[in-house]
Length: 84
Figure (cartoon, rainbow, N blue to C red):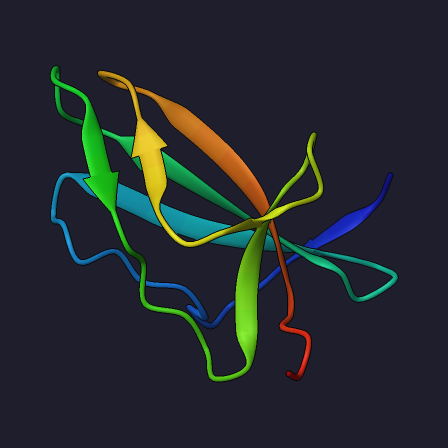
């Protein structure tokens, strides 16, 4: 797999103890990771671009809330939300 670094922050964390960044695959798909810096578990609702949502990589289901264990890392796919 080949990736290019994304220079703009599309997803933001409301918590200063959770770092967020993303990579863009050459096919245009974007992957976002969250890195917890707290010893205790952390829950957060990240700020997302309009019309975009996080998708669990294993289950393929939409995710509204990110749950990290102490010093945990989570990776999601950032995708367009389906229109109702």
